[in-house]
Length: 572
Image: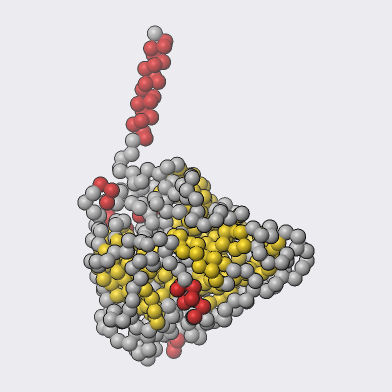
């Protein structure tokens, strides 16, 4: 009798266990294995550049912890906000197949995680591998809240290049001695441009060019003759950067977490939000070589940090106190160096680029100067000609609502956004050279939370056109939820009659540097339903309104519809 009772109890407990694990919605995709992480967002004291102050980071390390996974793994990360600020985490470059709720941009897909609250992010690295990163997506908190996300190929699947002796993550960043959240508030209140960062940093270290930083240096010890894979990530706020290693060649094998044909160069340029994997062989005489990070500034009249951050690529056997050989970086405004790198990026294999187009968008990007409406203009109108700085796409400056656009769309709540973002500018003219720049009188942009709605499965082409309204500039434009084929780019105004597109092996990227005074053309298929932010990854430009939202409607199939929101989705 006792054994029968035990059997019944066991059977009942198994039944209950099954019942409790049956999903209430279709899970896409299942994931091979699950990786669990806990992120505690908290303040920590840091001493750099002769100063000690508090910064916000994750798990009391800076940069934050690396998330490791394999292709098709499910990742579950509980984020506990123990900081004094609102927070979210964006998983940059992760396509979030049917997991838009976990994408992370504040007021786009979720309300922020308030101090003392938590939110669990769940997503699958479906058919994705390579170098990604995560960062805060509220105010300028990503100035310190960031870390690597490395996804390896499935077990038994090799890299398409010789296996490296070691791999290293190299995160480029900017460092302020000021609280970055308060800094943003002050800059926006001033109406003017931001101050330059106090330093560039490599893996959190400024290196010997800066005050009190002779020992605050990152280094890699290398074995002569061995080849190393460096996973380069630009997590900086407002600057694009060159990177190079003295006397060594870099072979690019991946860009934005997609393999490329091997391309060898002496330096690379990464805009904020871009990742590049390079192979470096330790084939020089034994010594200490500088790894340098310096500025690329394509805009006119902008103040920027011009002292390079230095790390060491140090051979085993080199004398510890030996002088490091300096790395030569291009001039800060060397546009040709940037074009040369972009020209070298090609997908590893031929790819399936959409040939027919259902939605053709033409999007101008650039800066504006709004008229001063303040009663204290000296305090609040420090932009050009006593105006207020702004930025826009198709002359509309994006305003974040006070609930998330995704919730408003999903729950059909009116009044928080409109679906009338124009598919082209209201009028065409010489965007690069003939912009109406009688500043600030005729450079005003309209303000609004306007979205562009796309049908599920539509094949989309976007032409991004830089404008010279205030200054031409290279803009790193990032699209959430998708990667896109970069089929063409050039200088001047886009001309459909003369442009040649690469429809065979274009690079597949999630952040494209639209060339200074030029254009870029991208294509993708809108097969991931949800609300997806498209914005410049230079943070001041985003604060000024350089972004918009693409809403991709549900399809008809079971795995073509956005699931219900998670129960613990933060409330506004």
